[in-house]
Image (tube, rainbow, N blue to C red; front, top):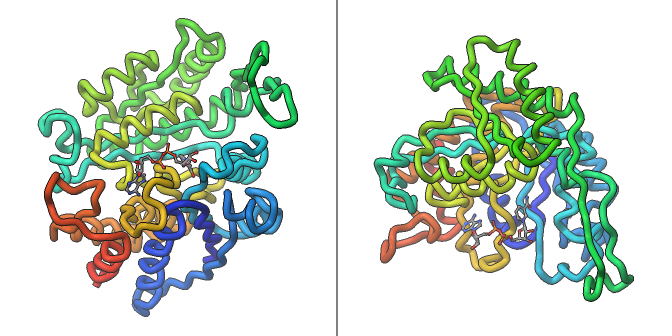
Length: 367
Ligand code: NAD
């Protein structure tokens, strides 16, 4: 199983190192019979520094060849003044587009041990287990035309306007709707409600009236799954008011970007949440839901659990090793039960551990 490992910027290398330790521990377990060929490459600001581009050809070629991609994070304020196409964040957009990764699956699960880490009352969030399915390769992030920066130095001072175009095609909406309904069906078999909430802004935007109509058409093929529609402003409110009413949320790229971070915070820390970005055949890129956290990069305090849980999702969705995935998830739960906390999930005044100690504890809990 060939895995392209792209650590990236900020805390990326630190957290990916812990996920790699976990994969190597699984590999060392002869009985599991797993062989991983890990190949590392630069991405993001690191790649810009070393190769002049945030997504060098060689990195893209490796990602295309591999069975799955394990990604840390990209983004570095030192590169904010660069032209947009050279900024670190363009690497992740380029990977999504070039690998056809159109479906982003972001579970938001509140581990019982962390109920106090949420900013919401425990009775509102305890037992939360929802899935956000975000469309990833369309919407306003990829629409044409886009307003260009007016001067070579990239400054907007004095510019008369800037614009980006929101656009969705029928096939783009159909395929993400299928992913959401199928996920709801799988979850229903595991005891969840079997409901999809399609989040739109159909009251204002034509693109999202179209989205809503196409989702309704696709729903005809899933009579066992309930479908409801919600405007994005209401969804943002309901997520903090009564998040457990949701099961699967499906939405476009921009709304999904925002709502999935909101859902992440319901669980107490963005440092806990994995994500999978899948193509039509199940090949995927796996990364934590958070960014490169430049404020804590290099300090050894970042929470590696989202990345370790992303590696578990990789084993489940792309490498088809559900037992190994479950072993990792159980090991993560075990370290939380033991009381280990990185700073982001610790209660005020509680003792905390660093990135490597947390990773080592997960490795130890794997047995
Ligand atoms: P962020 O997710 O990097 O950080 C937000 C806050 O959460 C920060 O206070 C950070 O310290 C904290 N945090 C994030 N991950 C953590 C972890 N594992 N453990 C402990 N605390 C953690 O978001 P941001 O500050 O808005 O963005 C920083 C950079 O990351 C920007 O350049 C942005 O463009 C980039 N970014 C990249 C991705 C990606 O690579 N897919 C996603 C989002 C943001």
